[in-house]
Length: 104
View 1 (tube, rainbow, N blue to C red):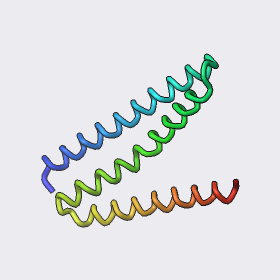
View 2: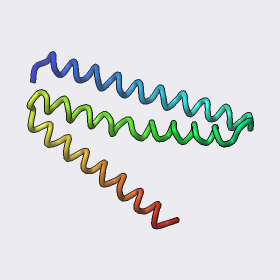
View 3: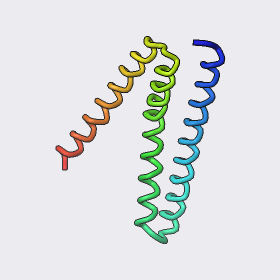
View 4: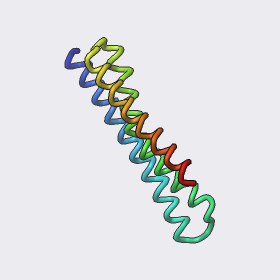
């Protein structure tokens, strides 16, 4: 893996994380303003939920982008480690969803 490839990956991941956080912050801020104004509870709740979902999805997308890039670079050690991290994230999300369903 060359320094140029690593630099490109870091820039891509930085942009992805920045876009995710900024989009999430915008949704959360707009949802909070609507909620505080009590103008429309439905759209406010939807924006707040979307903002939180984007915020939670951002690290998962980072892992997916990393996996694709490491595979393109044929760096199999990092592919394996990224698959392991993705598996842990997937297991965590699955257990959370199952727990929510069991509680309701």
